[in-house]
Image 1: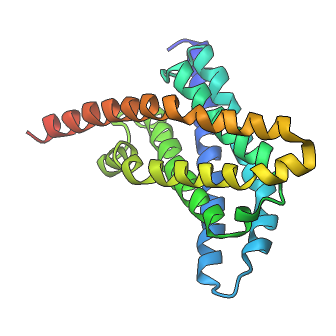
Image 2 (image 1 turned 90 degrees about the vertical axis):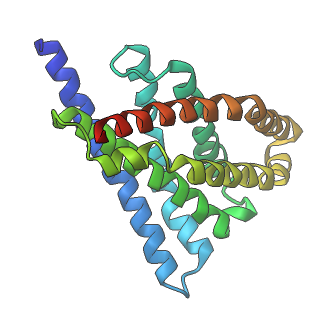
Length: 215
């Protein structure tokens, strides 16, 4: 491997590891909040929204990595996934923090779906780079099967938060911002089937490879 290739692998390795740790911290906060039965949902939201925003914004680097060919992820699906989340963390958590559903269980279901998915995904990529044998089988199985539950949970939570933010957006910034949010929600209609079909294809390939190794 060339020096350039080695440097790229090291960078991607550190990026994946730090990203997994960042989402691991967020999931830990959610779990601790659930275990503390008297925890105030509004306080939990206010105390974590900036951390969630910072960790998610780091994912913009994935667009650069895809565009430069450092990873094999398709550029279109990468852009769609990253920007749909940026709409939530920046558009809602930062500019419309008064959104009512942010202080409810919907915020926690969103974080559970996002953080669980990302911990497994980033750890999968990290092990791919660090170990010649690749990630353990159970990590690979989780990577390509968990989305069946977590993807609908995450998308439903995103849409509920966006819908809840409409009145706040109109009051705070005017109807034009409200229209932008509605338009963004409508983009989920063509986007969801494309992303879900892409993940199903990846799942079929992964499960077929696992079955072939077992034979």
